[in-house]
Image 1 (cartoon, rainbow, N blue to C red):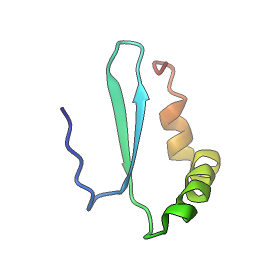
Image 2 (image 1 turned 90 degrees about the vertical axis):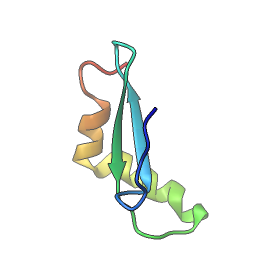
Image 3 (image 1 turned 30 degrees about the vertical axis):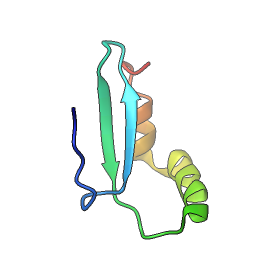
Length: 61
């Protein structure tokens, strides 16, 4: 079990690894409405090098 402190970041990304474990990355985000979140996340996935590196590690599924 893993607990996340939402004061550190409210976006939590999970990537499964080949060995059956899960990697997590917690990211801070500005306050936003739920309808704004989709665009914000799409932008993060395209333009944030930390997130791109997180999901494209060689040992991820």
